Image (cartoon, rainbow, N blue to C red; front, side, top):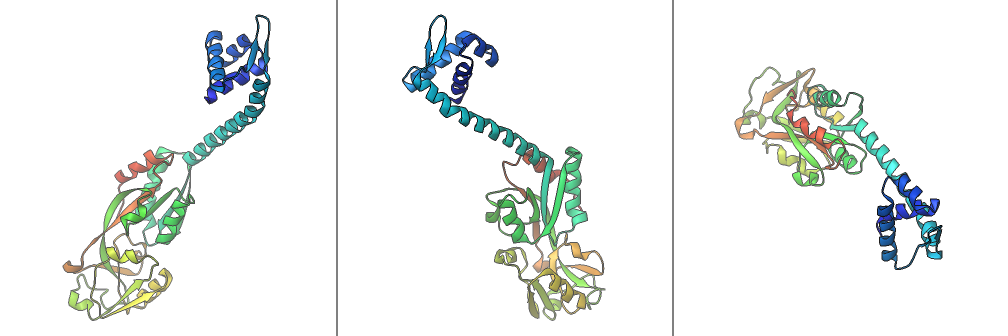
Length: 288
């Protein structure tokens, strides 16, 4: 049954007057009468007893009224909650970003653009691990993620756009013997220890060059990684947008045979109320 016809029927049942119900519904008396007739044809029984002087509910008509009044009330409540939810989603943005990316150079320009389009928006930001942020987005704990792409298939349920492709570079501290160098060779790298952040996602290595180092050291978290880099006895390979290069760190281009590009992306749900605005982030200039 068409829910609109149910609403028409309930209005007639509450007023027991076609003219009054038609006026309340902003339709003609004739159109209302026709919709009730169609509803009765669909149910296969008469719902109203009509004479020239009165309108009354039949037994089935009363049952239809009793059954559908709470249904319509629930639907109207749901519609109000949905409108409120959409309003909230359009005015609140929960952002997660991969914690190795530079907030001021990569994330902040994106948020400035969003605020320029939606001035009264409330934005919350969280620095996160790469796998955690993807899971939070899928669980609707985040609205938008800024990350590096490790495996396109992992984002197939989301919409994502490539913001830039950051060059992979060598990262050393100012205490490392290479800190004054502007270039290093593959042979140089074979004499030193390379440190790697042991992420849960094995696909991450797809976007890292297959470097031949003297030794490889794997550490469980970013804090340990940076502490070892600080000591000056290891080198890392990171994207040029890596946040920790601000400060006492140096970046050096990789040798030609090891060079690669790492896509930096913005991901969100395809049906998010702000999707049209988020799609324009691909035009925002970010600094690498």
